[in-house]
Length: 118
Image 1 (cartoon, helix red, strand yellow):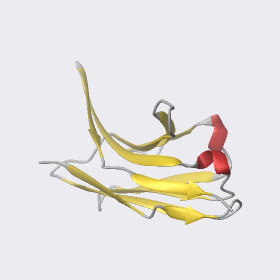
Image 2: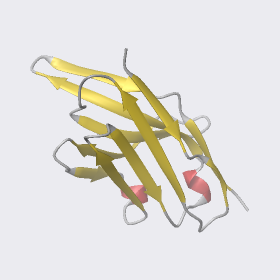
Image 3: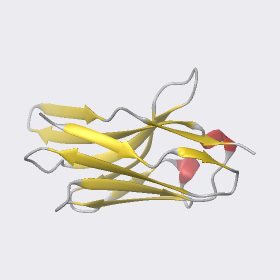
């Protein structure tokens, strides 16, 4: 059974930094790993993704402030968040995606709360 376990959330002041980590268990390497977030009363949105080959994709709202990285050998993905803003407050979810010829399979972590407040 595949499990994704996040860590690293917490409370930080505006302008501060946090690093989120996600460890995936399982016998395969995800084709894509990423981070999504959901703020209260809003839909879940993409933050950043990274492919097995290292191609990164970022949401415009965090471009230049967040950096995604992964270690395929350890099956982990991390999100370094700098210059945090109050609007970054949300529950952050780790995602692992397998891509097949006829579809995809998504796996999700339980989420970790990030609160940016003074």
